Image (cartoon, rainbow, N blue to C red; front, side, top):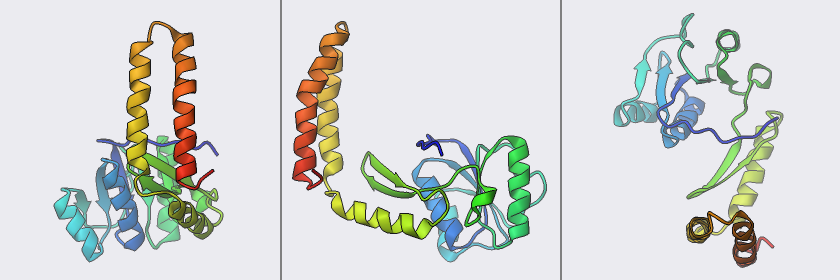
Length: 196
């Protein structure tokens, strides 16, 4: 597996399904700024509100051949194994990223359990084998992280930017300064958070 974080702002994403699982995936995609289209004959009440509030595109029907065309990322969250397989096959032919929920064999990516503290993001995956384990491990890590760790990241990021800007013409000194100034501050932050 090759882990990465995708920039999905204004990127066309499709979610097929309208139940509780689809709802969770759509909330996460909305948080990423994706341009979301939903196909499902029905949606949860909360998802119906999200569609209206966020002006999401919604087609109130079952999946049809050709629906996957034009999307960068697709999540199949239907109750039908056959429908998910058809969605997967069509997506693979189009070279699209596809995740069939709870069906690791029909995915070319997995959605990890995630922790977010402002700009700090941690992803935990079991490579689709046992998502419940990844979720429990996520909870343990999340409870270890201080709520304000994102603010500390911002503070250290500003120091980093100042060093890079002031020493942009001297790469060796810049590298040395980043190490000698930032490394001790990062160590302090980790110790204060009980992570070291």
